[in-house]
Length: 276
Image (cartoon, rainbow, N blue to C red; front, side):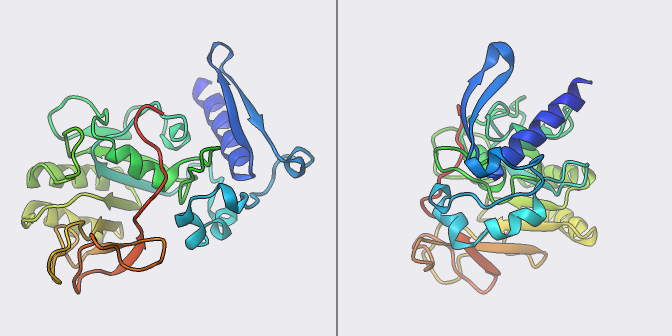
């Protein structure tokens, strides 16, 4: 019964946020929330559709890609058919209020592969990536690309206060990819990199490819020479993503090379962080 009520609450929260409502306050003692809503929303019948958020409240990256135009077709699928995205990164803040709606019920949606014994995100990068993908829009201007997705999280990187998101070992990454495939996810996101080949991970990436799972990886953030794509973005089965700034020009730090498939906003992105 609790899971059912929690799912219904999450459904309502998501629709309110995506219709332009802003979470004003949480009352923990009553397990209640106070929301600010627009007049058009307060007079609607049953909140049946998703309306565009005010553009001023959206991150520049969301506006630049015209993401809200797709939300009415992709958000609100709380019937078990939501797209499942695996984030293989530094872990996640499991209590972040802007991400709770994206966590499946139970304990099968996360796993540590670093030996740290916890999925907690001491670094912050994994929580930031989760927000870029799935955060509910809030009054601070954070909004995920696809708040209706379900997140599956594998911790493959440890460390604190470091700009380097380098993969721990090939074996750890391979095990995490295998786990994600076994969870039957639709997308595997790898915003991590290695300067060396990853043969074991490559084999698991090919397995994911054969199962029609999209594997997406950052091209790298260490541009020094023209051919500077990192692994696993170098592999043919991976969609390699470079970075652009507000001017829609390639970021100075973004790795370059023939293996880059697409680019996306990668600078000055307002997103979730550990601790709320």
